[in-house]
Image 1 (spheres, rainbow, N blue to C red):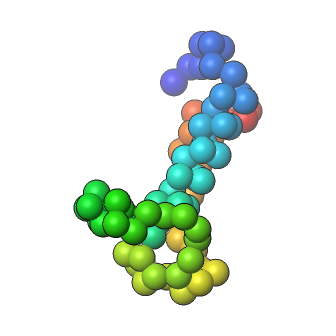
Image 2 (cartoon, rainbow, N blue to C red):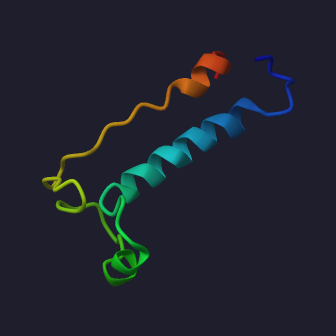
Length: 73
């Protein structure tokens, strides 16, 4: 896949950072119905949630696939 130069590295990096933050905030309500999210909105990172996370624990996911296509990020 060839990069055409129209997307800046800052935009790509910002997208990856935004995706990571969103995933961290969403881990506590992942796979829950919208009604659950409305009743129990995410206002802080705390224990419990879908995965029964202990306070201070986190789910680690790796978003390295974009780096395969854009190694100069």
